[in-house]
Length: 186
Image (cartoon, rainbow, N blue to C red):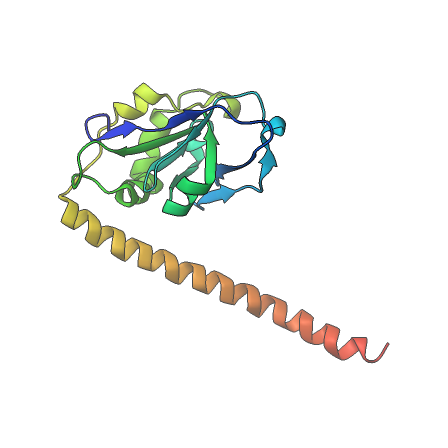
């Protein structure tokens, strides 16, 4: 990974009077958490950074449970991240797509590698080592093949999300009907 990706982030010194929105990363590949704005004076005493768009972002404390995502342009403009989040970008344009790496690391073979780079025996002690991550070797087809795979996998993920939403509506529908009917009788 260290031959194709580099850690890229810009350290900031929060202004106590300014408002900041922090990111987090959901486990199991569920994306980036966008927290509400809080005053700089209320931020914890850790180091904060701006991060680039289209970066592969790994939570160094929960990567082992797939807390991995790709940042958007808007997130890069509006949010900050603590030192616990590691944003990686390609060293050379056109060699690797962040979304390809996201899908790879969310796969079983990818998770084996992430867990290998996150040693420890207790949940809290399974911190992703930056050097261990950068030493990982992953399959890298040419960027055109990566784009095709990403397109197909993103499409499947979109379909799964749609099905999940429809399921939630289907589950809620009978209860809503019961409430509508019986609230008129009481």
